[in-house]
Structures are given as C-alpha cells and as structure tokens.
Length: 510
Ligand code: NAD
Image 1 (spheres, rainbow, N blue to C red):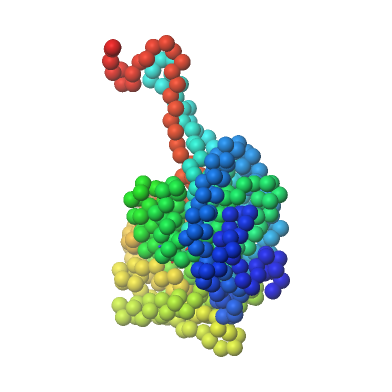
Image 2 (cartoon, helix red, strand yellow):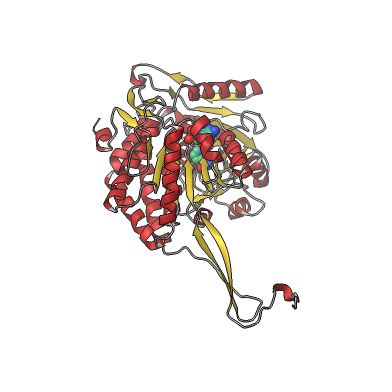
C-alpha cells in the first residue's frame, strides 16, 4: 500500500526509537497488526526490551539537560517545522490512522489536522510562557514567579486517538523545555511509528540530540510498569480507561510524581422542549456513532424532555436507518468497525445487561457479517430506551450504544440526571431558552470538564483545555492554561536593600 511506503512502514518494524535511531531488538516478540476494517495483516512490530527502556531513559534525561537551556522561542521553531512536516504527510498519516484504528478517513485526517493545530498553538505559546510579578510586603524587595522546564515527560496514549493525543502533550512539553517519551497503545503502534519517522526528519535536519522524542512500544505489564515507577519521569500523561488511569495515578503519586489523567467519559446531551431539533439531530447522531462510539467524548446518553420524547425517538430511528456502515476509507460510509472482537463482545454484553435491567433496544444491536465486511468488526449502532440509574448505563461501554432517557419537569431535573454518573468529561444542552442554557453552564449546572450549548459532546477544538472531572481523572491537555502542567513553578524573591526584614513582621535580632 502506497501510504505505508510513504510513511516508512515496512513489513517488520522496530518499536523503540530515540528520535534519531531505531533500537534493533527482536527478542521480545512481534506484535502483529491487523486492520479492523477488513481483518487483513498490515505489518508487525518488534517490542522493546527492558534494556532498550534503560537506554531510552538515559537519552531522554541527557536530552532534557540540553533542551531546558535552549531558549523557548527556538524550541518553538522546531515545533513549527514539525507542523510543516505533518502538513506534508497529512493524507498518508490520516489514511494509516483510519486503516489501523478503523475511524473514517475524514476523522483520520481530522486527527492529523489536530496535530498541526496544536503545533501552531505551541509555536505561539513558546513566546508566552508567562509568570506573574507580585507586590512584596517588604520594602526594597521584588517578587515574581517563573515557569521552568520539568524533565522527561511521558505520554501513554489510548488506541482511539493513535496520534493526536501524543501531539497535544508532546508539542506543549517540547516548547516548555521537556524531553518526550511516548508509549502508544499496542493496538495501533504503526501510526506511532509513522509519526516518529516524520519527526525524525526534523530531528535530523536540525541536528537535534538523541532522546528529545523517544518512542517505546512494549507491554503494559513490563515496560508500562517500569515507566510508572520511574523516578526520572516527573510527569506522566495517561489517556485511557478509568481502570488503567486509577492504577497509574496511584503508582505515580506514591513516588510523588505527577499525572495528567484523561480517562473514560459517559457523556450526555440534554434536549429541552426549546431545542432546535433540526440542529440537534445531526449532533446527536455524529456524537453517538462517529468513530463507532469509540471516542472518549462520544454521546452515550440522550436526556430528552417528555413533551418531545416521542418525536425525538422517531427522528432518531429514521436517522439511524439511513446510516451507511462499512469500510471507513470509503468516504460514503458513516460508521466504521470496532477496534477488535473484544470490543464487539463488550457491545453485546452491555446490550444484554441493559435488557435484563428493563431497557428496550429500539434500533440496531446486531453484529454485521458478510462479504462487504470481510473479517472486520462491524456492528449496527444501537438505540436503547433506558433509565439513568441502570448499572450498565452508569458505565462507559466503548461502542455505539445510545441510551435514550426521559426527563420530566424543569431543566434542573435533566442536569441532575446528566451529572448522575461517576464520569465527568463532556456534556451538552440543546435549547434556545437562555435561562436553561445559563443554568446548565452555571456553578450549579453541568459538572463536566466540557459543557457545550447547541453543539454535541464530541469534536473539541485544541484551543480549549481538554479533560474532565470525577473518574475522568481531572487532567487537562491541549489549549488554554494546560501548558503550566508541563513545567515547574518557582517563586523568586529578591532583596535589593540593606536590611533583612522578615515576612509577617517577625522579629529575630541577633
Ligand atoms: P486502556 O486503558 O486499555 O489503555 C490505555 C493505555 O494504557 C494503552 O497505551 C495501554 O497500553 C496502557 N496501559 C495499560 N496497562 C498499563 C500499565 N500497567 N502501565 C502502563 N500503561 C498501561 O484504554 P484504551 O482501550 O486504549 O482506550 C479507550 C479508553 O480511553 C476509554 O476509556 C476512553 O474513554 C479513554 N480515552 C479518554 C480520553 C480523554 O481525553 N479523557 C481520550 C481518549 C480515550
């Protein structure tokens, strides 16, 4: 396939790189990668060994010691060049993301566009790493704070965003003066290798040291655990399930390291009687079935006022019956496959559980097979009438299941349902009623990291900080002030007088 060639993906690939060199270890076994779109073999990856890990970490620490002294705008220049390279490779990389992960080509290309966007953001940021100047309470004293680079920053990424999540972290960390270590999901390592090949061109053209952009592809139980326990890594950004994030958070906190946790969501859209249904419907359907329901921000619950419930239900079923499911590289299709057969099992298990709890599947829910699907993991997206308190509705099932939930009375009741889950990532309200919208956005409104009005739950822009509350982990990546997490804050007080007054007026004469 031409796009694999353009990206430097061979039949067998090494899984460990310092940005300049691939480490040629083959003793740790091969990961064979098959496309979820058709079940065909794409390529294999040799996993990294513990010795490789040690080598990489040493390079990472050395690179940090150099990189932290390079002026931030010069660091931004490197990120600018990475953004240019990504523009050059947008089509092949977007195609690989689509082929390896199963999301539509449009979404694969969109993911690379997010990488480009965060590069642009980070370049600007490289001249804006601002601290504050404070008024000292003591005469002839000056006080300010400044942000310093932090160290080797590790990014552990989830399968559903094979490349974008890394760039949200790594491009900020790079302008902040950190070196990078990336452990991608072993379900989608080829997209990471392709990205590493693109970055390597910038490393070479600028004669950058080894270790600034490291990649390790290895088992969670060995390499992953080493990384979590490694005191040389002050910050680990983990994007993944709540289960993995909880474990990572505990291990890293025990050694007083820091984490940015970007974990599961259970996102809802509220539709009030004042909603513009024409606008709301595409947002709901895209949110629920886009990426086959495998986005952290996928719409999982639709909370609808009883007065419009039947109308919404009918329009939803109509919209779902028009969905085209199949090869995501064919741009006519709306829905691609699930990542693997385990995801299909989880989809069926959730449907069984919701039925047992009293829910009613009103559309879809079947596994799809036949010639046009090959050995791909395709399912018919499901709509289920349910109650918010069913145990399975409280969970994140990473598949296209939309729970339709009725609310009565005022928007306050709908907000209580929306907040009535353990996760807190993304939320939306569709209404033209200003009072309802403002209540939803108020301190007593949505408890999520993302709250939208008249937009769906998925499809965030990089300019805003991204992340969620409660069991979503509390981390923030990408835009706004998220960069501060990749640096250490230092407060400086300078006495330019001849006396030594103590703070709080304390007297200490000797
Ligand atoms: P996962 O939790 O199975 O894996 C996430 C990453 O953790 C992978 O790279 C995996 O190899 C690694 N990992 C597993 N065990 C480890 C260990 N012991 N030590 C170190 N690393 C380990 O998640 P997934 O199935 O790849 O992705 C889906 C999940 O990610 C969903 O829950 C989704 O909501 C979440 N997600 C969240 C966000 C967000 O920003 N909040 C974004 C994307 C995905």
